[in-house]
Length: 292
Length: 244
Image 1 (cartoon, helix red, strand yellow):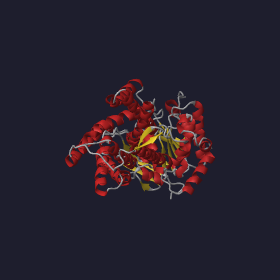
Image 2 (cartoon, one colour):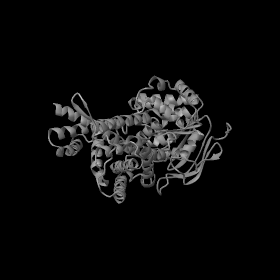
Image 3 (tube, chains in turn cyan, yellow):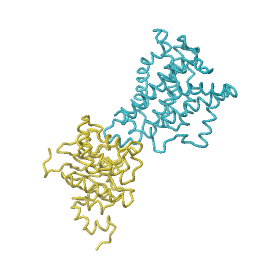
Image 4 (cartoon, chains in turn red, purple):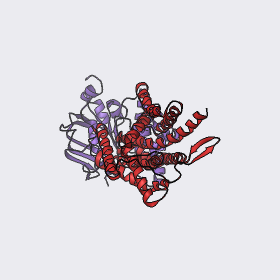
């Protein structure tokens, strides 16, 4: 029982980090119907950015998110504006898969040139600290990351639900032509939305670099997990992807504790297969088209 | 400024289409201020395309679109919206997962003055109380007729000079259809200028001051709403009655 509860704690904390990464992916899919295969690579870019800035400045990696977030936002807007916007609307959904995969490979190549393929870690000194709460270990970094994920998801929620920009994003998702007729600049909303989705990788990248050694090729593993979470949650449903991320985090930790860590990663793919076979619209797929 | 005896909108020899083909082959039409004009015609005649060329959703290939005396065919749809041309498209245009209130606010998206927005909501609610009564309901949960009422109420948020209504009764049950035509009558009494495209020609012409018949991309006939309803040829072709 102790092992199960410990796995639940670890899984929930890890799931929170995946929720942050997947929410950006879901936002991008919701607004533009683009499956962004570069989201994992953007996370790794953010990890390297945090790594380099930490080495240069010595500032805490969590504080560096303030600097990396606007950088990742600009990178996202530039990707959308120069590589995705020119695609013909009729072919955009299919071609964007190829384009974002090419972006992922390009980023991996660029990072490999600059940083080589050596595994790196961000080590501020407290990366292995843990608290003992009623006999259970709570990793300090994962706990901060979990709190950060909740804060970032809260900001994302408030932005989408309580601001005029958020209304224009949700309107564009639900009925693009109608939104345009009401004066919404759908091109600007798409670019800003893509940038916003990519900007979530700044926090996710910092946390990923703190809890996992990474190299430029780490994005393959990451994107497969993210896609599993997004499909499980229901494409385009941010709330669904958060719950799915927590479920997957807990599921993988339980498998790791009760069976073997080798089978832990495989849990994601078994779940993906089952969802695609039994409930293709995902556990929390929106009944209303594009309901963010 | 448009004088009362000058057209608010003029289409002069407008040609337009999708790809290489032409749907509109020289449309001429005047819309007078304060009037409702109903465009009827067979499927594929280009009725919805006419509205798209006016709102800017579709560019024209020839001719002129003149609004309040100015040529507007080079303006974007957002610029035309700013001039007071509001297009309510054929498909349900509400945002189904957003509340009625949020949908109404989206109608005022290009406005910045919150006081003005509140005034417009009050004015729209006088004609369509549903926007207050069901303000927290998801728009997608309303009946077809109720949704159309909210759409029309939303179109009033910019105090539009011209409302383009595309097939507002399409796909609705009889009760909802009745609600829609009642809404159009309310707008008429409020002095709004409306260009209405309606497949249900009898009901459309009945609420309109004038009507125009569009055939194969050209306006074939123009008359008063009542006059067209009594025209034997129009009656035979579009109103489902046999000729006398």
